[in-house]
Length: 284
Ligand code: AMP
Image 1 (cartoon, protein in one colour):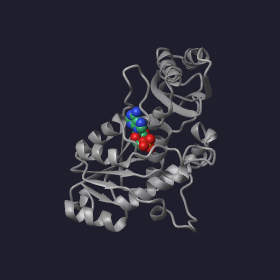
Image 2 (tube, helix red, strand yellow):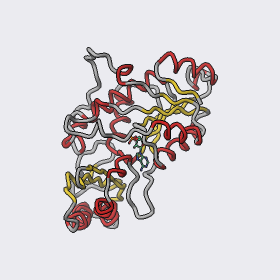
Image 3 (cartoon, protein in one colour):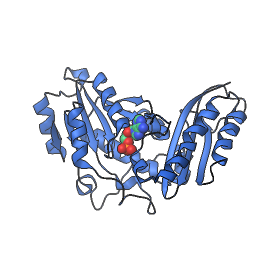
């Protein structure tokens, strides 16, 4: 496994592994799994998906300051680099790309990606600028690593939808693959932020997945929202940011006459930890 921290290191790694200029031109394909580190079983599942899609897998580990708001947890975000390298080695990763903030962003940086209207709804309403920051770093990672395929978790459903939009809107030559959300046996979606939860917080946090499960048992939009909100409302130590039922491609709220797949998404704070989760629901 090669660890690179800049473009020169990545180019050397590509050469050493015999990765060509894209699978379409005869080289062997490279799949990228972008992460912020503190790797858990959810990340591992994405790495395994990536291995099914390409001969070589690159994992990027970069806590991206651009996607954190001023009052968010950038400085206390968990950083477990040595353990992350062990996970990557055990999962057969060929290249780990771990740049410094200084290597990623010029001090006089001006240009970035705008997530547009779609970046200001749902998560974007509660985290202004977050999706701009995500798209900017993902585009930079694509340019640096030059993957043929990139794998993202459906746990961050709006992020995944926005990355698909960016690829379509900007004609990026990368196939996007979405991986299912990995959960604890009791339903809690795995997240690097779960390690902040006290035992009581963790119990309260279970209301997110229980609410989604309750909602996904219903078929009409109002019943879906109502069933999920009833579960959330019964957990007094949750502060709910949103519970929405949205179109998977646009993240616009679905109307009462909607039929088809929708995403039921929730965000809530437990103590000082903010958690998100979602499920796909069949609306009729
Ligand atoms: P992060 O390190 O939190 O930025 O996440 C890196 C990638 O892992 C993103 O594509 C996430 O959607 C994905 N991911 C995070 N948690 C999970 C999970 N529980 N199951 C599947 N994928 C996940």
